[in-house]
Every structure is written in structure tokens, then in C-alpha cells.
Length: 483
Image 1 (cartoon, helix red, strand yellow):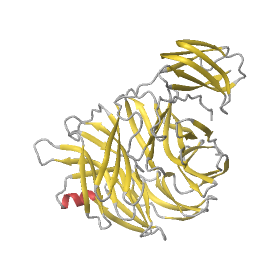
Image 2: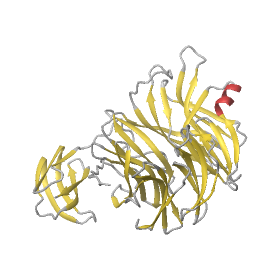
Image 3: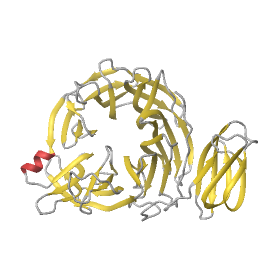
Image 4: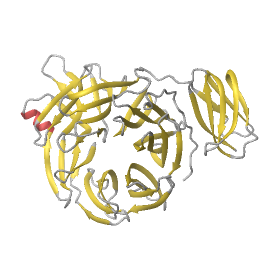
């Protein structure tokens, strides 16, 4: 499959006690970058797994490693494998020497998908790739639980059925299917969780909780229906959407809170906490009336037994009614949740000019978290991967910004032959050209120019990075091709 040229765009950032930064990765106009997962390699180093799409079709995955200041240190593009385009979804670390990536493998000839497993070493060099061929099913990856160095349990949905149905496969990393449940529960916005204390897998589908034995993979049926519970107990309705969190003592659900008891219905962000007997512990709702709130799967990340982060987004529905569909503003919502006292440090991060959709939230060793996802301009022209690093209080730098402002940088022609022109609204004080190993080839100072012509004949054909520094202290990096 033909690879696509892309650009890397870094927003200005300021380090907050060595912790906070926010990064955006822009694709070409017809390209989407979806941030699918981020984790902590070690203290102050973070790995992002993302996927590139064209016209909503995956064209390949990428792995990027950043330091704590937001500098891109390593980059790996995942290749096609055996006629399959690899769409990564999640990664975990197997011991200290291996990274395990899984997701969907798209067959480029028959337009079907199965699962893949890929192992990489600490330098992100690919060690092995295995396609899991399930002859009876067209699989779609949901989530997984790592059992040991040779076996994983993977939750999937069967795309061949009239209604997508979920099931669990026990698979060896060699691709062998050891055991599989019969597809039986309809999937919607679904996620999959493992609870160690009772050795149970839980699958959430909107407001309904299903269970499977983690030992035998036998189904345990419907364990809880939050909608039915709310109705029978005369509770205001909290629809969970995709968000569902679990540890050994509490279940967390997040969605939109609706109270129709008054003349004007209330519609807000809502969180409900339930104990192991599914009795409500805390019912929390907050936010302006008329905001519809949702969360992605894997939006909860437990820091310890009593605290967790949650990310989501909010859409304004001015009249508070479910039928209203106008979307005026998208936000990222970040919470620190104490299972004994409720929600603390509730914060909203505004993206007033962009639709922001977080994909995953993962805790970090400093008590903070990483949030990765995508954002799209309101015209739907471009979708970009973002990485957001928060400290232990849920803060990032800048602390309270209603709209991100950046020195835009245009480069053309791209690809370039004998010259490259850069143009910006901001005053450029210097620029550098680097190869992909980070070696500086050109380093020039400027006098606050906004339009610069650069000769590129001295460069051999290949891909390079152009880094422009601005008078306000910010910088932008873009990638270009020298023909």
C-alpha cells in the first residue's frame, strides 16, 4: 500500500514541574490520525500508539516516544504484513524487554479483518508478527487481558452476524486459538474488564453488564442493568455511554444525567459509583444544564485503590432535550475520583474550535495521567492525534486556556526540489533542518521574518524535519520531502 506524506505539528508548551505538555499531530488534508493508546515507558518518557487513516480506512500504525518536555525522540511506522494493513488498538509491556501490540489486521484483498499480535524490543524494533485467522468469524478487536508470556484473552465482536455480538477468545501469541466463547451478547459502545478478586471478565454495553468466568470463559449472563435499576428505584437516569471503570471494590459509570421531574429537564454530566452488590454508593452530577456528556471506552484509569482519572467530551444541547442535535462546543473533561468522597479536581479543558474525542486514559507513576485521542476541525476537514499529559492535580500547562493559539507555519512546495518557502503569522527568529535521526544539517538565525526562502539543493533526496523557532519562545516542527 502506498505510504502517505505527513506533517508533524507541535503546539507551544510550557513544562509544569517537569510534567505537563500537550502535543498535536496533524495529518495531510485527506488524512486522519487517531491516537489509540499511550503509556509510560519509564519516568518522564511516554509512548504513543496511533493509526493513520485515509477516507476512514486504516493505512498503517505508528509508535512515537516523547520525553517529558514533549520532544519526539523515536518514531516507528508499522509495516504491512502478509497482505494485511495493521490497525493497532492497544499495547502492553511484557516484562522489561518486550512491547506487545495488538489490533485489527485488514486483509487488503477481501476487505475482512482478523486480529494481529506484534512484539517489539525496547528500541521498538519489530521481533515478530502473527495474524490470528478465525475462519468462522470476521473479528473486531475490543480489548484484552494479558495472562502470561504466551497467552492472552481477547474480547472481540463478530461483524458477520446481523447484530454485532461479543465473544472472548483465548489465544496463544503464536496465533493458535485455544478456546472461544459463542458470540451471544449484542455489542454497542462496549468495553471489557478483568476483575482479579472474583476472576471474572465484565463486558459493558451501554447500561447492561455481562459476565464471563475468566478461568473457564463460561458466560455468567446479565449481571446488572443500570437502566432497569434506576427505573425501579425512581432514580434520575444516568446513561453510561461507553464509560465504565472497575477495580476490586467499586464499579464506576459515567454518562449524562437526566432529571425530568421539573418543568425544564436537567441534562448534565453524571457519574454513579456502585459497590460489588450493585448498590449505589455515590450519585454525582455537575455541569451546566444542557450539556450532553460522553466518554470513550478505557476512559477510566485507576491510580490506586481509591483514586482514578476519567476523560470524556461534552456537547452543548441548549434546550436540554435529548432530541436536540446542534453541537456548539466540544470539551475534554478530566476528573480525579476518590471512591470514598466522590469527584475531586473536576476540570474542563476547552477546545472551542475543535471537536476533541479522547480515546484512552492511562495513569502515570507521578500520580498524573496520559490522555490520547483525536480532534477534528468543525468543517470535518482534518482529524489529528493529540497527547495530553496531566500532573497529579489534573493540571497541564497552560493551566486555564479557552482556546489554543499557535504560530501557524506553512511550507511549500512540499515535496521540494531546489527551494522551500516557509510562511507564518509569527516572527521566526531561527530555523533548523534535521534528518530523521535528529542530526542537525542546517541551523540559521533570522531577524523576526514571517516569510523565508530556503535553498534545499544541498540536501540529498529523502525525508527531513524543519523546525522553526518564534519570538514568543514557541516552536513548530514540520516534515517535508526533498525530491
